[in-house]
Length: 260
Picture 1 (cartoon, rainbow, N blue to C red):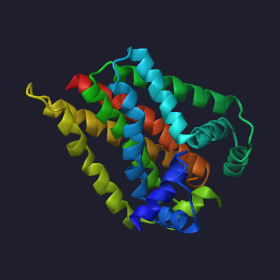
Picture 2 (picture 1 turned 90 degrees about the horizontal axis):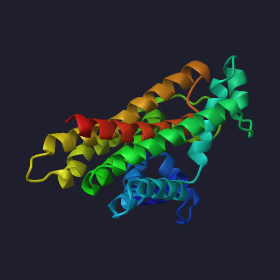
Picture 3 (picture 1 turned 45 degrees about the vertical axis):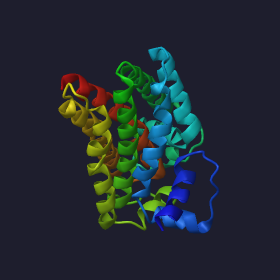
């Protein structure tokens, strides 16, 4: 079941040519823990540039390029749509109409531009650390972003019929348990390679924990905004949680590493 769901998750969350069928899609949408599991693989692949002995800006640029080659722009498009909807002064019906508009307005351009700039700055900060620190931070931020999406799917109400409702309507809070377990284990798993004889266990654990938990907090805020302004969570809100969660996770991880 999980392996079938993983194939469906790779199709939904990445651009990897794994092939999809009705069974894998149905298994994926009923198995939210697939989101963080795919996040592990995505994060590991996107973090590879930080292992190369290249200049900091080059590593950051390669990371961003790898990230969007692997994931595509579907979730970024969701962020742009939400940015446009947030700029509308109207009720939920008017905002939903803007979400469905394929054209990107000033609000969407601003939201996407700020997200990309802050992602680039976060990548530069991560690249400034040692490779053994950068790699787990990137993985943690990606897993956290995907966990945030899964959290909304398990706890939210759909705003309208569409891709978001296809995921949200078949899940409830009981499906959040394995998602939470996968996240709780993350700091212990990823902080181990960062630990060395100089005793950086606390800093490593704090950095990975911050990078993985901060995106979930962002997702909760995104879900609250969706409930208040759209009448629920849409696929675009899920995309927003992913994009902003990743950015926040990178910055939170580096900040925690610096402070501890």
